[in-house]
Image (cartoon, rainbow, N blue to C red; front, side, top):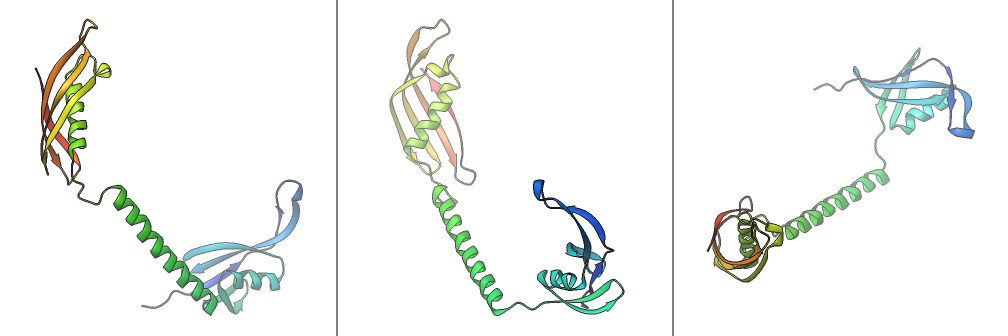
Length: 193
């Protein structure tokens, strides 16, 4: 596959306001468009003299070749040993950071296959019970127990909550629950007696 030709197209000098706020002044500058084939890679600016045009192109990572009018042929500047070392170190640091962050996320999520425990089953049972109450915000749970393992759980206990007249009543409940570790979701039902 042939490499695309690199070129810099140096624009005509134009007078522009440069700087910000009180530091603004008028200057004569040139836009330099750098192309790889027909694809424009970037535009840089230089002062209106050949030395700065060449300096800005070199700073951008290119070596200037032949000049034909306002078009300069370019080649990519090879990386120095320092630049290669810096990129190598940066790459190594990036890999280590990705591994650390990934490990932390896995630990925080409990790994990809989280397992359910008694407290998870009790909490989810409370949610299913609240769905059946007239005043879920008034619910106070007690004597709650849970048993099971893996994906099948049961839980029971006592809930005290307001009825439709505002009186606090105590009710026994039981839940049958199923846990799916693949998407960490619960299904089930609650019975009040």
